[in-house]
Structures are given as C-alpha cells and as structure tokens.
Length: 332
Image 1 (cartoon, rainbow, N blue to C red):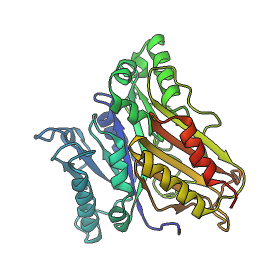
Image 2 (tube, helix red, strand yellow; image 1 turned 180 degrees about the horizontal axis):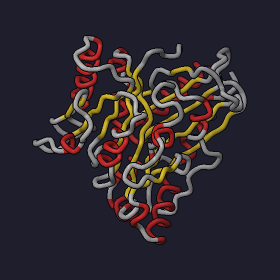
Image 3 (cartoon, rainbow, N blue to C red; image 1 turned 90 degrees about the horizontal axis):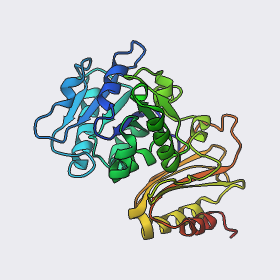
C-alpha cells in the first residue's frame, strides 16, 4: 500500500446527451492556465463527430470509434491509454500531465471506472481521477426520471457541473436540486455557463499537479447524512463514519464478501480510512464486484483521523450494507 508517484490522472467527464460535456471540454482547453492534457473522446456512431467539435486539440487526441466506452470497447479504452502512454514516452506526442476522457451521453460510468482502476491501466502509470458529471438544468428532471444511465452518472460523480442554469426557471432549478439531493447530496456543485468556471472548481484543488487528492478534498465527498430520496428511485448513498482505527484484513474481507454477493448492484464505494499501523489516510475504491488496490495520501491535511465510507447502491437494503460495515470494525 504505497502511494503512487509520477502517475497521470484520467478524469472521466460524463453526463447525459446534450448536457454540455463537449462545450465544457472545449472551454477548459481554451484556458491559458490549462496544463497539457491528452483527450479521449468516446464516439457512439460509426462516423466520429464529437472530436471535430474540439477546436483547440491538435495532438494527443484519441477517438474510440467502436462503440460505447462502457461496454464493447473497454478493451479499446485500455488499448488507447496504452497507445497514448507509448507515444508519450517515445516523444511522438508532447508530454501530458492528465487525460480527459469524455464518454458518450449513454455511458454507464461503472464499467469505465472498472477499466481505469484495473491493474493493466495502473501499470501504465495512470491513476483514476475524479468523475465530473454535467447536468442540464433545463431538462434534468425529466431525464433523470426516465433514464437509469443519467441517474448513475449523477450518483457516482465526484463533482456535478450544472449547465444551462441561466436558461432554467425557478421550478426547473428546484427540481434539479431535489434530484441531486436524492442521488448525490455530497458532491460539490459548480454552476458553469458554457464552461465558465475555475479549474479548481471543476477538477479539484491542485489539478493536475497534485495527483493524489488531499485529504481535505476527499473529505468533501463524505456527508454526515445519507441521501434522502424524494423520487421513485432505487439508488441510495449510504455514509459511515468510524472513529477508531480499522484492521485492514478485516476491512478487506468484509468488503470482498459484500461485493461477491451484491456487486452487480453496487455502483461505487469510496473510503478514506484510518488503518492500524498506517500513519497516512488510505483511499479505498470499489466498483461492482471489484475492490481495487488501495492508495495512500500524503497526510490528513488537518482532517480528523477517522474512517469515512460511502457506498452507492441500486436496490440494496440499508441493513445489508450496515452489516458489512459493522464487520469492518468488529472486534477480533
């Protein structure tokens, strides 16, 4: 469990059809303060179009043409990241300090994260960055009520970018807030008209130089209270705080058992843990059936030394998750 060094974060930019992903991406690439990045655009159709809308990327852009990145082309995503890595180390393309991956509007972010957390991708010195989800304030309520993919995109986001807020009326904006409060009350919300927002607000403090998210940034992801659904949805975010240090073997066993039994319905789990015998906070990530190798942050950055865990599920009763978390901290 050593902290990675000299790794390149892959930021996933997702959001439903027409929610402004390409507009946001284009806007941030225009910034003079934007560091050099590689861009991967996932095209669903046979003829790639979206990448042509990126006006300011001439090198380091890759197009996934073979379908949706969340299904048939997971191997294509891995291949593309490997290709970018090799071109980078050989000097074929300029060096880059981050990768921005724009998914299709219909992508389920879970399989995308599975690929980014996988060992082959980690061996290429990539690390899974945050998930940034765009939300169209003028159509979000009907979209979220009709499309499970849109709900998952919001539920697993580390940051929610509210687009077209200037075009929505009070009732529309209230409905958007209600949906977000139901699905992901903890993620910071950034209002961005045509991509106009600070890079720090969009991608986090220190992006991308601080590849290992500081503890105070991580802490913003963990609410004191759970989501309180106001809509007919089976997606829930369950949050836990454990003041005493945890035994890693016990945490690993309890979560592996939970994922083995219920992984298909676990959209994402994310933890900032205090582990016995480890001075630094440990970052835990899980998607569906897979618990990924943990990483260490450099320090607690003034945050309380306690373990916090959020598990986002679809159709799992609270009692099942409660038992698994209790097993993490059970006395030996």
